Length: 204
Image (cartoon, rainbow, N blue to C red; front, side, top):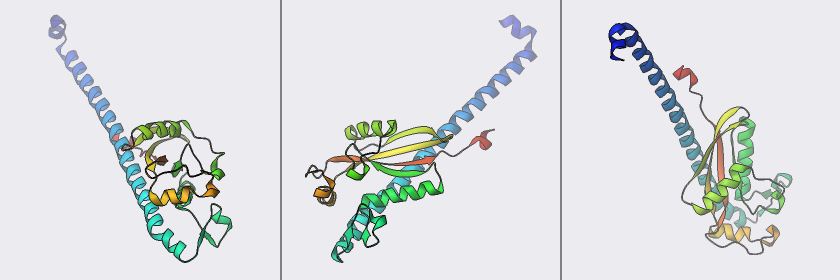
């Protein structure tokens, strides 16, 4: 091997340069891929925190005012102009609005114990896995990168637990849970889906 380097020094230098360039390009691509995934995760987490804040604000500040003024809540509020949506329905409607803007964006709430009007909904594999993970790891988020409509997306979900105001609402006879829920119970998960930014022009 030493004799080869002595006889062909220029060829060896060229090979070393090419090898170094390949390693460099591979490293740049790897770190660019990791950076874009981290950016997508951070954006999904921030969006989910904002949606959760909106949900809590509606529950604590708007719902009591509606009740005090004699207003009523209805799962079919779209068909009843005199009624108002439950807090969960606000999130669901917002998710529909996001999909209208971009079919690869949405937010939703899902559970193993859906409301009667949502019992025909089928959970996908991400949602099934998220519920199992979040029930056992309530303080962590559940993340997965998937291809959706040909676009790489990030899905991020967090656990939902019953608060006092949630229990009072969810245990209504109309929802058919027969007093199942108690404060602190694992209710399900809330998730967002966002496209992962394309960084190809940056690294090519």
